[in-house]
Image: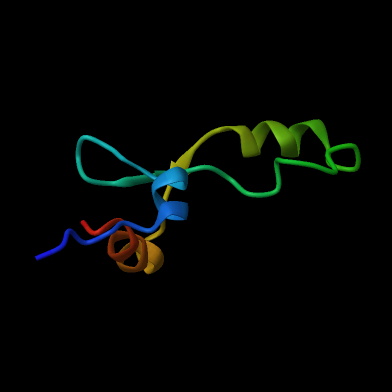
Length: 64
């Protein structure tokens, strides 16, 4: 029986915490930063957790 592959894009974007929650980075922080305020860019810097609505989809992609 072959191994089940994990989605390549998902394994690059998500990390699982010690308690089983899934961390993610914020979007909109990669380019065209001149028109965004410093406060907005600073808020996008910090990682956050995946919302409960998306948790099942992310877990399926990561084969958890």
